[in-house]
Image (cartoon, rainbow, N blue to C red; front, side, top):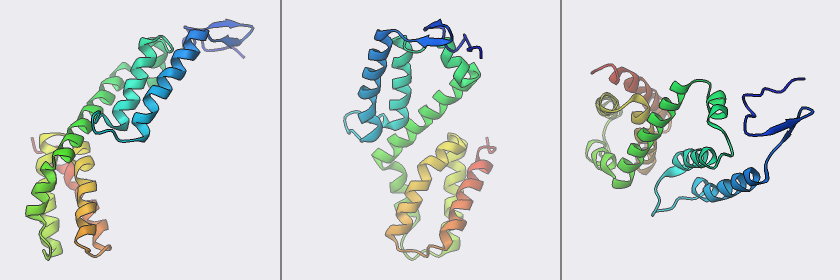
Length: 181
């Protein structure tokens, strides 16, 4: 069985056995243990989130030559996929900023008062979601609004059976709203 030589360009191969350099093992382990706390725990001084921590760890692996750039592009499949990954990471950073500053939560407190009828909630969520997905992307609208809506719904002790309809409305209006502009 032949090895795929493009995946293992940084390593030496003898008799179809991959030999990894010692510095690559040490740097890979150091990078892993440096990034692991940021993935598992939330630090207020470094609000990059788990997605940002994983991308930072991957970047450190390439910078420290644990992985070659060709290996990364082979794993990802296409160089354009890397642009998509960084776009989604940037959008998740924006949503984390909105959540931290409670910008959307303030708007939801005004629009979703306790005792509001379900149809009113559905209509208001549709408008907010469509506008948010038109400004950013539909993924960001869903990432920002879903946890906030779930939190607001449990705080108000609303009927759990209405939640399926509300979340379906959230996903649908995010896709419709991205076509508004």
